[in-house]
Structures are given as structure tokens and as C-alpha cells.
Image 1: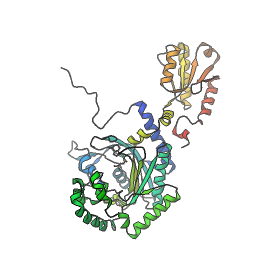
Image 2: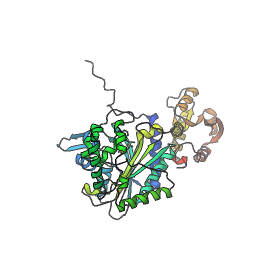
Image 3: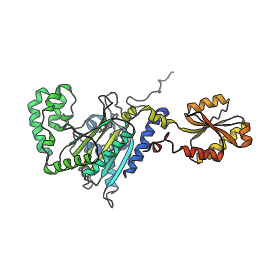
Image 4: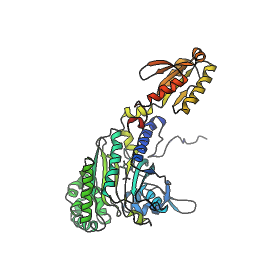
Length: 433
Ligand code: AMP
């Protein structure tokens, strides 16, 4: 009996193969390095959480909770969800482990897969990857700007052209009266709006501002703007936020339609979009969520953070940047004969202990076939070990980047390679990050 093939991945998921992963690792490594500079430390939370964590924090009226979560009952009958985002998990962990004790401000970052049952669309995956950061315990607008500066400097490293969009979504004092105004207008406009907008007008009026349906746009443009209805405190916060953006020399555009449609979001909301991507151009989304910890049963804590989509960023990364990172082999050791093979193994061991990336061909074979492998591995150098080299202990080191070659002993090889480490050709740390 022939069996159905299992050689496929589920829709919206894919394997990331070694060649492609060079780009991912380049971004991840650079992100870690920059985030550490700004005082963020990594946190890892489970991929599965109680369904209520997301239902309560993200909100029943959102697409995520309403239709996109991977939710199932486990063997004990408990409702479990694969995380569709990580902010709720990070805030849960922060409150659960009383991380607020002792330190005023806690800066955390995470990276990993998220799961949403999305409709099929270019640039949208069902398992996708985010890097995000959260600042807990600090309500100052300057920390918002510092965090935005951090993510922009990361994107600049990748030579990605971006635009920062900002808005204020008010607070529990000024938002309800604004939403009443919005609802009144939406009722009047209702015959001209799409079905989603009509439904949202009552359930979650702010989300109408997010609508992408062409025919709705002229009507939505006429709706009152939340920035014209902020309370004194929110207005002051937004003024100070913009002042700090200007002090940090970060260009921005105020986008009154940019809202996070969830109740606990307050004040600052922002998005970073790519100038080079099409419809799915949002790379980073974030904002302030001072109420979230309490919603989950924790203490009142200020929160601000963002999530950056890796899948899209990877598509934008210039080839030459990741190609440099993909040069994964510092030195390839070609060997001719059994004794030379043993010497190559010993030398590789020494060089690896010194921190260099080495490889060699276990099948041996002709020099030509070994050099072909060196090429495939993107080796920067090739060391050739033959009978003469075995006897003299001095080896021919070829630099494939400029075809230069030199005759060196083992210690000199280490010194030479170390000297080159300052040369910007390989890792994000070499890139002047
Ligand atoms: P969100 O958590 O919805 O605010 O999304 C933050 C960022 O994650 C977006 O700007 C995208 O870059 C990315 N993102 C969200 N959903 C997906 C998806 N289904 N596939 C790929 N990237 C996504």
C-alpha cells in the first residue's frame, strides 16, 4: 500500500534553511548587541499559555482573539493557546516573579515564534517571528523615545529605509468621551461604511480607524481626531514625547488614525513602516500599556514596548550585508595524504580553541575538489598542508578575498587571523555596531 507523502509543511509555515538563516542570525545577533547597549535583558516565556491570558489582554473584539488564535484543550481539559504575541506573557512573567521589587525600571527583550491563523497573504505567516522589547515600571516619555531610538538604530544598521508614525490614544479619562463622539459620527456615516466598520462602530469604535477598505477611506478621514480631544495630562505627555523625539533628532509623522484598539493602551502609540515594502509595510508596532499588569492580576505598573516582525525585515536586508555574515568559515584546511590530514585535524582543533571558524574535507580527495568545498563554504582563507609543509611546519595561507598568499607557522597564522578580526567583514560586532 502506498502511503501519502509527509514531505510538506503546514500552510503559513516553512523551514528556514541554513543559507537563509544567515540573514536571520545576522539580525538576531545585531539586535541582541544593540538591546544590551540600552540595558535590556532577555526573557524567554513559554510558547503555550492559558487562553485567558490572551483573551483578557488582547481583547475579545480583536481579530487575533476572535479568529486567529491556535487554541486547544490539553489532556487535562484546560484551554491552551499558542502565543499570538509576547507582551502579555512578558508582563505576566514580570508580575508573577515580582520583578518590580527592588528596581525601578525593568527592561526586557524577547525573540521567537508567534502563531496566528492568518488568511493567506504575502508577507503574512501563521508561524512568524518577532523580536520585541518591553520597559516596565517607567512612565516617562523619554524612555519611549529611547526605546524607539534603539529600534531605529537597529534598522539603520540594516540599511532599511523607514518612517516613524506616532499618535496618542489618550487614557481612560479622555478616551471614553472621544469614543462617544466617534460613535455618533459613525452612526451618521453607517450607510457608507463596510460591514466590518459597522460592526466595529459599536463593539470597538477605535478599530474603525484601522479599516483598509478603499470605499471607507474618505469617510474615515472626516472623523474627529483623538489628538484634538486629549486631557491635559495626555496632551502634556504627547508634547514631551515629541520634544524628546526632536532632541534625539528622530524624524516622525503624527498619524491620527494610528490606534491600538485595546482598552489598556494609553497615550503613545507608534509604528515603524518600511518605505520599500508594499501593503504589508509595518515592521514595528508598539505603544504604552500602563493598565495591562492590573488586567492580569498584577500590581499597577507602567509599560511601554514594541514588537518587530522578523519575516519582513529579512526580506529587506541588503544581500551584501548578510553575505558578509554568511562568510562562515575563517579558514579551510586542505590536506594531501594521511599524515597531512592528521596535522589538519590538530591545527583545526587549535584554531577553533582560539575562536576561529575552521572546516576541512573528511573525504580528502584532490586539492581541486577540496578547494571547491572551501568555495562552497564561503571560506575566507585556505591553508594548504602537503609533504613539504609537514616537514617544515610552515604552511601556505591563501586569502581568497584578495588572492594574496603567505607562508606562515601555526602561531603566526593565529596572529595573522587575529589581526584581521578588526577588519569589517564578518560579524555584526565587526560592523561597528
Ligand atoms: P502586531 O503584534 O500585530 O502589532 O505586529 C507587530 C509586527 O509583527 C508587525 O509590524 C509585523 O511586522 C509582524 N507581524 C505580525 N503578524 C505577522 C504575520 N502573520 N506574519 C509576519 N509578520 C507578522
